[in-house]
Amino acid sequence: PLYRFDYWRWHPLINIYGIPLEDAVLIWEEDGRIVAFANIENFGEAFAHFDLCTRTDELEVEVQAACESYFAAEGKLKVWAGSTDHARQAMLTSRGFRREGGPEYSRYQDLTTRELPERPAFGYEIRAQGEGLELVERCWASGLAFHPESHHQAIENRADVGWYRNMQRAPLYRRELDLIAVAPDGSVAGFATVWFDDVLRWAAFEPVGVVPAHQRRGVGHALLAEGLRRAKDRGAVRALVGSYSDEASGLYEKAGFTQ
Image 1: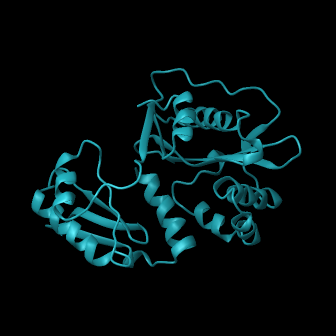
Image 2: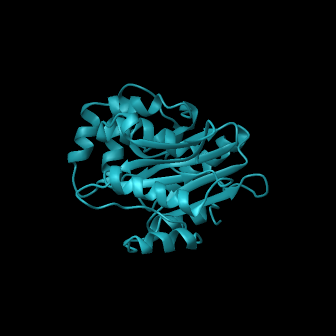
Image 3: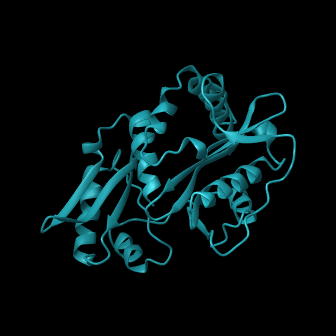
């Protein structure tokens, strides 16, 4: 989905790795049109993309070989294959790759055919994120939600909010869809950013997080419900979300991401 390139371009590439765009993408062209490209997402992790009308076994092997040459880190490379893409899985196996770790679940729901989940009435306010101290609080909450074992990342996030302003520069970013949950004490308890592609009319949630002290209180569900409502009000016909853990999958299924 297009939002993932936006998020990758304006957050990991600039904020985390500092890699120039021209060093992070390989492009294959035929008669002046792009037929395939590959990009690094994290060091030692590559993604390959193909125009399905011109995808061939030979081109896929060529792209894969280039990824191994350009994007491997310390002699290792992580790549992805769809669960039903048996041809790609066989090609990777033949090149010495082995399956490792858990899957990434890509979930979606059709917003035109079902009732949206209700946002529960409770002591947290769900609203679009503001500026100033609220932005600083949002950066702090991000560190706590994704790195609960240590406050180090939260401290870094809050010390310089420039990394978040980089994300706000992305073309698909919509401030009114950048949501926070505010606790009764005024702190940011959770967040959900919705990226809206107004051509495909798809909305995607990335990231979604809840501060550990506020988990299991319905905060995540309320953020998803409000994000889905706002996206549908803007004409979205499909909503997307990705996840890795069973716990996250349960939250998204409850919010209607069952496909």
